[in-house]
Length: 243
Ligand SMILES: [Zn+2]
Image (cartoon, rainbow, N blue to C red; front, top):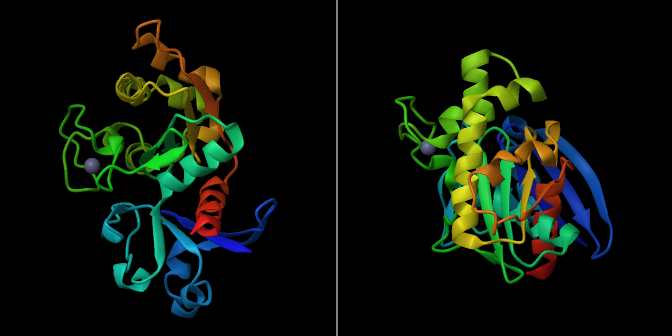
C-alpha cells in the first residue's frame, strides 16, 4: 500500500493506493498538519506533494504555504504538487505528452514528456511566475507575475471572496493565463492540456478555448479538466508506489 500526502496551500489530503484502487483516509488544514510532527513520521514512506519549488530534493521556497517548515520534510520523499497532479493526469487520461496546470491558491504547472515527468533542473514550467506586466507584487517576491492576475490568493486579495465561473471568465487575468498556456503549448506540443485545482473545478474544458485563439490552427491539443480534489494526493501515491 503506497501513501500520497498533498500538503496544499490550505488543506492536506492523505490517500492510500494499492496499485489499483485509491482510498482517501484524511483531510485536514495544512496549518494543523504541519504542527503534528509525529504524523509526518508515521507516514515516512509516503510521497509528500508540496506546493513549493523543489530542486535536487530540496525545498527552495513555498510561496503559498505560510509558516511552512522545510526542516520537517528533510529525508522524506517530496515532489512538487503540480508534478503529482500531472502524474495522476497521465494515469487517468493515458496521454504520453501532457501540459498540466493547477489553478488553486497559486498556479502550478508540470510536463509529462514521453510518459515521464519532466522536471528540468527541478523547477520546469513555473509559469505562475512568468512576467506578464503590471506592478502588483507576487508572493514569490517578484512583480507583475501571472499569479498576481489569476490565482486564488490574488483573487482573494482583490475581491475578498471566491469568484463564480462567469466572473472568472470575465477577468483579464483569465485571458492572460490562456495566453501563457498557449506559449507553453508552442514549446511542448502536448497531446493534451489538463487543468486541475480548486479554481479549475468550477470551469469546463470549453471555457479554455481562448488558449486556441493564441495558437496557429496546427496546435489543437485536447483540453481536459480533472475535478477530483484528491488528484494531487493520488498522483503522489502513484509516485510512492513506483519508488
Ligand atoms: Zn511570482
